[in-house]
Length: 259
Length: 259
DNA sequence: ATCTATTTGTACGTATGTATT
DNA sequence: AAATACATACGTACAAATAGA
Image (tube, rainbow over all chains, first blue to last red; front, side, top):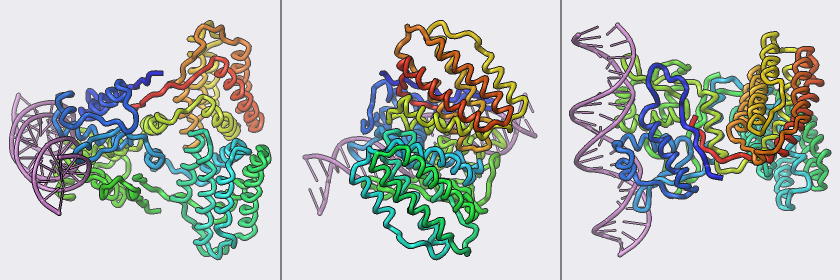
């Protein structure tokens, strides 16, 4: 299964003839990496080597390296034995990069919950009966973190963030990297970018109690390997959470995310 | 709703004290952009201005600009009136950036179809009764593009790619940017990265016929505003498509994606 | 602990390319 | 056609970090 490359930017680029040199060099370096089958942790040639190999000046090479670094593909260290190293794109970086895409689109709470309400149940169902005792205990500990309803909207927000971590923990157990990433991404977007308009309203303790109840029942369904039960509990849970957000008139704020 | 910024890389960073200068500068420039409320198309200060403003040399500024460019946040033009301009991150770039994240994870066909099988039906349901006649016609035209079953596995692949475009067209109609992006992302991953192991096997014409049938019925359900009908048709469609992929022993290949 | 070698990081000056007027 | 304004690229020099002797 030899890795292949797709070259860059064949799309229209204004009136210019093509990508700038650093971008071209960055592409060539990617080629070189894949051709030589470099794995993560492997060292790339030094700046000096790259200069002679590609016949480019130092600045150009460095700009190319910054491009690869910005994409999360390499990390660079100084000193002897230093240099640039192939690096697996981190989840955090991928999150930030994707988050920037949505900077200009105005994503709403409803948009995210539309996805959550189908993805979270699917995740729950797929995890039924496969979690270790440790994982189940960690989930229980998360639920126990707060046993009283929130006193004000700010505490409500705290509770919500802890609850989102519950979902991130679940996602981390998935064997599906795409599903894991998305659940995690949505949870982060919600905890980073959500503000509550009704800051002084009394939180709805009844809905909170139900959300907590859902989570507890979910953990037991997961333990028992009851996939369809887990799916339906999570589905109800999402509906409740969504409603709670609506009651708080929660909104997303516009942000740049820089890893 | 004043935009805010999250600063970069508070995470552990080896032994070093912090991000390199260009990264810091890139962050500061992001700050500057958001503070001044620059919108897409707006011009950033020239290199010379940035040099004095941040007290950095040209090379450092340029590396910072390459970082922003690699993330798709700016585009740069030469010439008078040229410079760097705020640029909405394109869908293509976001796709490529996210695709790189999965370069090291080994995503399987099953992973993607697990998501498709819940997201596509949700998309279908949400589009029922809201599509224009033009949009419906475009979908019908896509279905009509091939009216005969594939003769060999290579044609089977062509059919599959056209069918994936059908789903991308649907996604483009969604008012949910996140849902749209994801459907599109998965369709691209499948059409770019899929290879068929059973290249010489006769394609299954019966399954193909059923898939085609699903699409036609789906379009009419969408026209009639039958959300639940559309959802269930799409759900069946996904199951069939998944099975088809399994019969072809389809696999994902490992690739770098450079926009 | 100090020096030394290695490699990236920063700075600056100059020349070239490119598009607008 | 020429002048202008900007990015692009090069070369060199030196600073900073780090591993090893």
